[in-house]
Image (cartoon, rainbow over all chains, first blue to last red; front, top):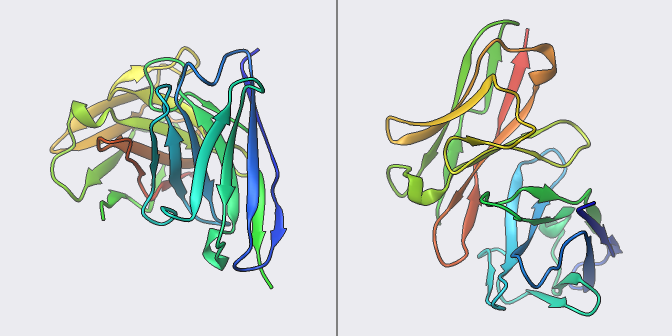
Length: 117
Length: 110
């Protein structure tokens, strides 16, 4: 079964760091592009970052230079390293991928990040 | 900064038809944006409905359809069911890995 499971969310103070993980099963992360999408409470979806099969990475303007996406092929896991966190980064972070022709056709259940003092 | 605009809310009667649209601040939406549509119910991750403008996923009900309409991309729901009440999001591709979601449409079935 194709599945994405996020972990690593929690409460962090402004200016702090957190690393999110996305463990994939049923497919290999190095073969497909993997993305992070976030959703603040009561708000819409916001694309955050993507890593392509060739290793190229891209970021939304709101997180560029603060967040880093990478993957560990041996663990079949994608990570989102978040630093210099701001209150406005608080959200549910979803891991997502495309295994077919869609931009995104599979989603994880999400992990919640709270940024507060 | 690119902005993708959707109707904030729409209301439709059961059995009716409704069209949700998605516009780009950069100009007309085209097939090169690979328009995708998602449905999201409270507390759930988004569920993919449509990709590449008008292609349904295997799980997408036949009453959902996608199109390009007057410089926008559109999602049309026919014979609307009570369970279609949800938030709907479009997603567009702008090259160099950049993806942008629309602000979402809250669809009420009343």
